[in-house]
Each structure stands twice: as structure tokens, then as C-alpha cells.
Length: 252
Length: 244
Image (cartoon, rainbow over all chains, first blue to last red; front, side):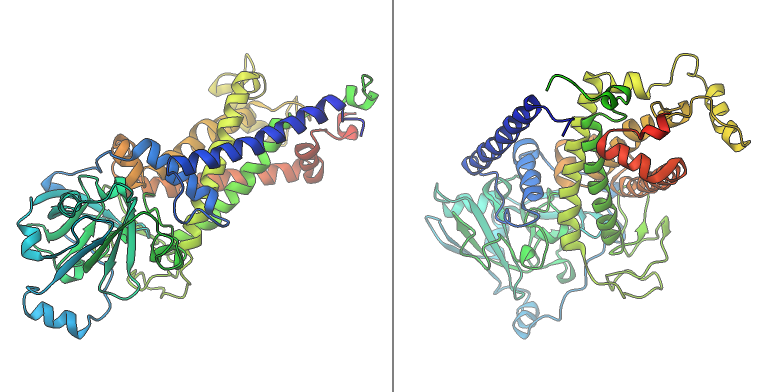
């Protein structure tokens, strides 16, 4: 051990101690400021936490890129949907007049909205890109009402931290932290490119989250629950995605 | 222990401790990024230019690979299993490792004069002519005059500088330009590259250049004596017989 000196050993020991202490402090700070994603555990937890924390500190509350009308893709693509259920087909035959969006959980006034109710709220549009985790993308105009308005309408309780949302398709559910849920571009989308939102693209109602990848934009939305913890939902990882191996936070 | 052994005096460390640690961390991260990048690639082995591109649009080019998704029709079927879930988790975790490691290496290198002393071409070698001489000499069977164990020649220096200050920053930039969250905060990161799909295509080509560098680098290490050079990058010591 001729290359080793006592001084080096002490310095190394101090560095290791500082490193462990630093990690413990970082963990406490992350918990304190809500920088831990629901899927922060396991082998990929450190990377996922760094990504989500960096997003929360640096990029949250910034608007997703919007495009000019001439940039709208002439050939948009949607992953083929599973054959719809009989109940869905009946609702479709009736022009989705019986479609309901139930909003409950940590809210002052749990409410069930029809599509007409949602269309009576402030309707906005955005020309943004859907980017799939596989690598493909398209630009479209999305027309809907911001989720923030609906959350204001039902009165979110102060301790609420997440908005969980569910598709009529089995095992299709996801969640957003309150910052992303209240983001002005997070829409309950009912129209696309000046028309009704086609069923192939998630009609009659789709969650639009342009700050995150395509799989966060759940199709056939029918239920929203406001909560303070994602632990009670599924396996407690924040959405169905981590149960299938995919990250809860899809900003990258 | 005030007295150093005579051997330690004669053989100064070929590679500093920081260089050795960051080198091997980068190896681990780069191999993880490469494997997971390939995994992500086979879910859509088509490339586009501009902002958007999808299965309904004509690609710029398409790789003849079996894919993991049924809607990518490039004539090679869908034999591959979907590994994007763990692939993407690991890709970004390894990306953090390479970014943080790279930051430590570059800040240390600037602070300690590593780039100035070891990687900037020496005075009198800072010209295209001198660089060309470095390429030509070994091709003609000649031997570089300072092909020793303790310095890099001009061609090596320029190559390392390009990898460290051009290719790695570019591969990180083009990767970040694919993040809808990152481009929300920094829209220019995608726009300067010509759009999202251009960024993705560039990400692929820069990866090919980095893989090319890896191949040549390992081949050169093998030519110079694989175990001697690899041991030097682990222990920091150049072998005594090579110095003699």
C-alpha cells in the first residue's frame, strides 16, 4: 500500500461521509418540496427523481411550444384503439349526449359534467405537438376547456396534491401533480382541427397535456379524482404506466 | 508516510484520479445509453426532417430493422419485444450519469489545466498542415516522433477535444430537444435544430459518430497494447517496461 497515505484515507472518509450526508439532506429536501415522483423507488428511482425534480424546479409553468396554423400535420397518426365496448358504441350512436365526466375526491363540490356543460365553460384552442415516446409526432389544433377551470368550479381542497384521471378503457388511468393539472395548456379536449375530436384520437373527451409525451394524454376520459396521495391508486406508483414499466413523469 | 517509493517517482501518473474515475463512469453510462437507445430506436426505426413525422408520413430514411410496434410498416415484421419502458427509464438515468460526470470532468479539467496541458495541440502543431502530417505519417508506415506513454499527439488531442466539446454536448442537446418539458422552457433548443424530428435524426447521427469514435479508440488502445493501456486507465500507472 505504498501509494496510500493516512491523509488520503482521512480525506476519502470525509468525502464519503459528506456524500452520504448530502444524499440524506437531498432526500429530505426532495420530500419537503414535493420533488419525489410517485415512482421514485427501485433501480430507476434516482434517475426518475432527478428528471422530475429538474422539471419541477426549472421547466414547470412554462408554456409548451405552439405552432402556426400552417404547421398543422396533414397526416396525423393515432395508435389504433381497442374495439370499443357496446356501452361506448351506444353512447356514440347517441352523439355522446349521455357522456359524463365525474369529478370527485378532495373537492368541495363533487360534480358530474356532460359534454354540453364542459362546452359552456371557457373554450380555448392550442396548436401543439403530440410526441409519442416511440419517436413519432404530429401537430394539431386542440379545442377544449382548461382543466384548471373545472377544478376551480368543483373547489379543490388545499391539501390536494394530485389529479388522477381515468379512461373508460380498462386499466387506463394516469395522474398529474397539481402544477401540471393547473397548467393553462392542460385541456379537457373535445375538438381537433376545427371539428369534433374523432374517436380514433380519443373522442369525445381526451386529456391534453402538451408538456408531456403522448401516453399522458389519456383517451375517452370519464372520471377525475383529486387526491393528496397516489398511494391508494393501483400499485401506488402514480399511474398505470409504471405498472407496465413506463415512467409516471413523461416530460422527456 | 512521507517517503514515496522510487517507482512512484520515476513513473508519474499517466492519468489523474479524476480522469480515471470519470472515464469509467462514462464508459458505463455510454454503454447503457447505447443499448437502451437501440431499444427505443426499434420501436420506430424511421427518421424524418423538420418538426413532425409519423407512420402516416414519408420518412427521410428508414432502417431495415424488425420493430417492436405493429404500426411501423417497414417490411421487416414486428418480431422484437417492447423494451421501451425499462429502456427509457435507464436511458435517462444513464443520461444523468453522463451529464453529471461530464460536468465534474470539464470543471476539473479547466481548473487543473488538463485541457490546456494535455489536450490542446502543442505550439507549432496548431495548423491543418500539422494535423495532416499526423494522419499521413502512420499511413505511410512511419512512426510518430513522440509516440510515448505520457503524451498525446496532435491527432489524438484534436479528436478528444471534438468528442468532449462537440459530440457529447451535441448528443445531450439533441436529446433534450426531444423532451416536451425541456422545450417548453427552452423552445430554441428544438427550433435551432430545425424542429423535433430533425433533432431526433441528428441525435441518431451524432450517436453513430460517437460509436465510430469508440471503435477507433478501442482499436488504437489494442494496437498500443490493450492491457498496458487499460491498466494505466485503472491504476494510473504506465507500465515500467513501456517507459524504459
